[in-house]
Each structure stands twice: as C-alpha cells, then as structure tokens.
Length: 262
Image (tube, rainbow, N blue to C red; front, side, top):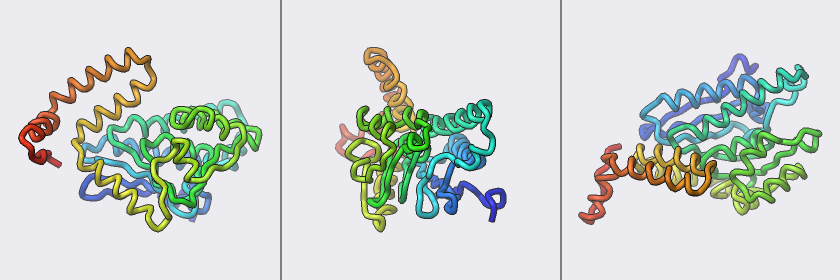
C-alpha cells in the first residue's frame, strides 16, 4: 500500500480527552515525508481546535519512532527553494507542538534520529523504551542537523547537545534521560503503562491551569529573568481568577479534595 493510499497519522481519543497520534509509515521508519509532515500538522491543528482535548500522546507504528526527514524525497528536488520550503514546513509543525494548549508526550519505542530526535525534543514530555536510541546524525552525511539543534539545545545540557550534533553518534535511552532529552525510561513491555501513569496524572489537572502554565513556561524561557518574572506574575494572577484555582485553594483551606469538573 502506498503512502497516498494509507492514513499517515492515525488518531484515537478516549473518554478523558486523551488524543493519541500515531505516525504510520512503519516500512519507512516513519520518516517525515512532506505528506507525513502535512498530516501531522493537520492532526495537531484539529487538537488545537478541540476544547475537549486534555493530553496528546505522539506514538509510532513499527520498530522506529521516527528516522527524520525522507532523504530520498529530499534528494529528488535539489533546489534551494524546495529545501527552504521543506524545512520551514517542518519547523512550523514542530512549533505547533509547543503552541498546543495541552501537554504533549512522546512515546518512544525505537530509534529517533535527526528530525525524529527533534520531534521528541519538541514534545513537552517523553517516555522511552530502554531499547530506544537517539541521534542527530546528519553530520555523518555532510548535513549539520541545524533545525534539530534548536530543539536539542533547549532541552539538553548544552555541551551534551553539541556533542551529539558534531559527532552524529547514538545515545541510549538511559543517556537521553541523564542528558535531559527524555523524562522516563522503562522496559518495552512497560512502556504503555508508564505513559498511562503520566497521562492519568496530567488529565486529572484543571485544563485552564495547564494551558496558561504551558504557554508561560515556553514564553519565559525566551526572555530575560526580569521579564520572565513579570510575565509569570501576570499569568498566576489570571490563573488565580479561574474557578478551578479558587476551588482548589478553598479545598485546601477546608482540608478536602477539590471538586473540579472534568
């Protein structure tokens, strides 16, 4: 079955509003073709437009999480205009993950290389199987992974990120956790259960607080500390006016569980 004949990103949603988006090019190691990027962009936009969505899980079919850009497709049109459009399209999709008002978790069951490693880094959280491996190996082909470097440098220890970029070598899931790329590492058999633990905790939190907090978290990272504190103060004041926060504080005072609406 060709890519044109199958759904490149599968979507499922449970009763809690947990949306799972599954990359579905297993035979191509889920490489990010133009069609795959467009499909994922569309799926993320539908989540952004869905007020019932609470958490997103990015998963992948097959042995690999994502092997980065589709190099055969890239080589078929070696023009500056094409490459600028392709990397801009991919960057826009990656930024959509950060702009979503809900937390995004990467479920990494296999290798994540180049733009696939970037995809993991751009998710808010990541849970990896112990067998997963990570690399930004473009430099081995003479192509420095510049766009993945933007994401890695904002997630990992700076020197660790640069070492990955200039050597092109793989790191293990445990190393990825130590260096800040993923949150949790478990045996493959426990991957779904570990993702569910994280999902369950997040899905139980007030939606408004998570949306305000996520937006502030990334805004403040890009500003100076004084501007960050000013922004954070305004955000907390706005959050405090929301009914869920008022109820949460009152519940603490009353020594009872908060009565948040789902």
